Amino acid sequence: MKAQSVLSFFLILTSSLSGFQDTFLLAFFSNTYTNEQTVIGRLDKDVILPSSFESGSEVIIHWKYQDSYNVHSYFKGSDYLENQDPRYANRTSLFYNEIQNGNASLFFRRLSLLDKGIYTCYVGTKIQSITNKVVLKVGVFLTPVMKYEKKNTNSFLICSVLSVYPRPIITWKMDNTPVPENNMEETGSLGPFSINSILNVTGSNSSYECTVENSLLNQTWTGRWTMKDGLHKMQSEHVSLPCQLVNDYFSPNQDFKVTWSRVGSGTFSVLACYLSSSKNTTINEPRFSWNKDLINQGDFSMNLMHLHLSDSGEYLCNISSDEYTLLTIHTVHVESSQKTASRDKGLQILVCPILAVLVLISAVLWIYLVKRRRERDPVCADERATNASGNENESMPLSGCPASTGNETGQDHDNS
Ligand SMILES: *[C@@H]1O[C@H](CO)[C@@H](O)[C@H](O)[C@H]1NC(C)=O
Ligand SMILES: *[C@@H]1O[C@H](CO)[C@@H](O)[C@H](O)[C@H]1NC(C)=O
Ligand SMILES: *[C@@H]1O[C@H](CO)[C@@H](O)[C@H](O)[C@H]1NC(C)=O
Ligand SMILES: *[C@@H]1O[C@H](CO)[C@@H](O)[C@H](O)[C@H]1NC(C)=O
Ligand SMILES: *[C@@H]1O[C@H](CO)[C@@H](O)[C@H](O)[C@H]1NC(C)=O
Ligand SMILES: *[C@@H]1O[C@H](CO)[C@@H](O)[C@H](O)[C@H]1NC(C)=O
Ligand SMILES: *[C@@H]1O[C@H](CO)[C@@H](O)[C@H](O)[C@H]1NC(C)=O
Image (cartoon, rainbow, N blue to C red; front, side, top):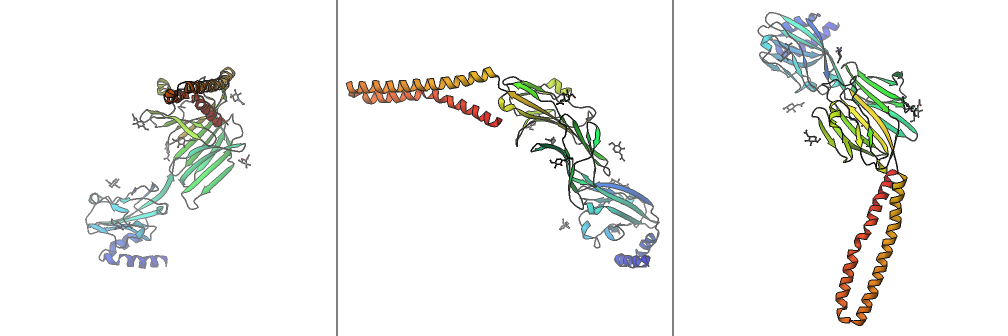
């Protein structure tokens, strides 16, 4: 019954290939596959579905999907694509120069998740006919990222993978002990999936690790997060924050990127980064420095000179490759050194008014003198007035005070 319906379907399909039905039918009824292989492809990428045969003349090649869709046909030395299912349009080709050598492999472009399934390749020659089977599996795994977020008094970590298929295995560890995730958000019902796995940070002195594993593609990514003890520094001192490459995670020939950044409330500024592939360092903050010799030993500890009050905050060292992200957070508290602060403030409080009073007094004196001279010598009055205003201009730099004060308030503002 089933065989009959399939047979008639097949006859209709192949009727246009008159003269070749016999060989098609022969192959169709032999349920045994000459060869069976599994191929793993990636979403949006190309793949080769392999098929080989004993070379002979009058080659017919017929690729089908799930026994029902025509993928690619070839006979009499050229493609025959009139019956090709539209979903395969412009996506298939054979290795035409290789066919005479017994190569009927299909080059299959731009895979979608719908392409997964069973493909059969029938090949008939004058001598024999065979059917090869290829099981195609399609996966995707965009490199995940680990994020650290704070909401109110809670802080949590998110391991986030934007595009993944099939559904990955996500595991969390706190201080090397497995812990269950607190929350999971998933979108994309048929795949590819977009997944956020969330864990609350309960002990900020602990290290956390999340592993995302795609078993189909045999790919694993690990994110590790550690928060170091807070450091207290005085204004205008310098700070050194450690961050080292862990050799357990990074093999010598693996490319990675190191980024140091400042994480403020709602702000994120990159201080410096390093690319291992080009050994290229980019430094965005003049007070930041790296030690070149230490970098060559995998030590990315940073130095920040002349600390400002506004340098207080969290510093993130991010070492990332395709397989790992290691995040280390340091908190730095910069305190105003009492002496400097009071002296600076004292200066501003004292000097500004004194200068202002001096300016006022000299201005009043000038006006008084000019008035007196004008009364005595009216001819020179205009000249003197010009001089007076010129003098006033020269005293302008005294108003440079507020500019530096403005700077200070800017910093205080950053701080709050
Ligand atoms: C067929 O030829 C292509 C291109 O040279 C090659 O990549 C593929 O491995 C060959 N397949 C077989 C089964 O020989
Ligand atoms: C296939 O390619 C041809 C020519 O390049 C184009 O005209 C046609 O629209 C394409 N078909 C599809 C389904 O992309
Ligand atoms: C760490 O660096 C990687 C690679 O540059 C980046 O994709 C990721 O978003 C960074 N993570 C954080 C938390 O900044
Ligand atoms: C994790 O934190 C969220 C709020 O950020 C809270 O609603 C949830 O109950 C916490 N879960 C656990 C297990 O502590
Ligand atoms: C964090 O751990 C380190 C060593 O493991 C310890 O010296 C430090 O006191 C701990 N800090 C807190 C706040 O528990
Ligand atoms: C998965 O990858 C690892 C290392 O990348 C390799 O040792 C292992 O053989 C692979 N397993 C499979 C099934 O491909
Ligand atoms: C380093 O990177 C910057 C931008 O990221 C680029 O402009 C510069 O040419 C690079 N230098 C080298 C030596 O690769």
